[in-house]
Image (cartoon, rainbow, N blue to C red):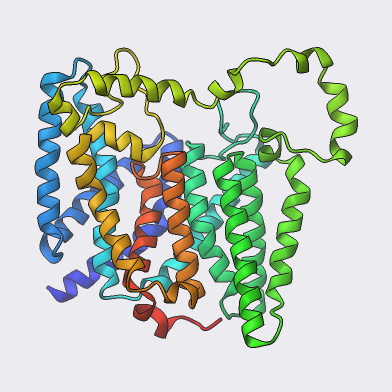
Length: 425
């Protein structure tokens, strides 16, 4: 049984490297990603039932989800069984994968292997973004022509942004760790390439995350240099990246979307291409509403929740609420989870996250400021949760939620669990 368990755990760890490949298959219209992730969900659930103390929680969650489905089957006019089940599966996926890696983290040092696997994934995504740019075949990040950016050969801009936001910190760790000069140059180029890719996506989440990660690396190395009494040359490399990003920003998709320009770029172009009449004809709040219409969706869902019977308020309105025509999520994960699963379900679904964070921050808060590896993992977690709260497509997206799950598992295992096998910086 022990050998069988170890083999399953190794498969789970190396399952990480399949993620960008599965996403590319989904973009190509192949159903392979759904089948593989569905199998991973079932295998993960079986692993928890056999080997984890969290099996009781999983059984309680299963019982609640049955009640949620039954409630909406009888009370929701727009009930669509496959749509509801699909949303539940995507939401439960994060919890199952989290518990699997929490259990694996007790027996294995996760960081060294996962750092390398995630770095490989970010490399694949960056290469795909470059190829899509060169061939002009990238999927647009926004449906609105006024906004620029593409997601390469991947579907969701918010989803890809969250993946890159959580993954780029592992790339930075690969750059900072000791290794051959060729390996460090390769990681530096990947860090620069990922920065270009995250600016090309055109979302604030992706670009902001890259700035936060690289900036945090500069601050950490600066403080560490002061403590050790000697300057670390990698600070210069990271500062060069930040300056290059600042110079390139007006030419990038994110610069266009945020309307950022410098006099060097704007004087000759902007005045010729944008007539004065158009500038004066923008008095309305339409640009605010153009941001995915979240205000409207949220207000509509709030109204549905207030009008719903008490049973639905407790157990949830299901996917996209009691919609009449077309289902629309607010695309802010925590809010969507509350309305979809109700007060009781919201608490049950967030328990694993709260449990993991509590057992991470309380015992290891000192190591947070002493170990760069642990520090960057915590930044990845914060970026993942921030993306979930503001842009969505994380907690209910298997492609993105697995990165948040493994980051939480690494943090939960604590620096002591892997300190002996980490290369000193």
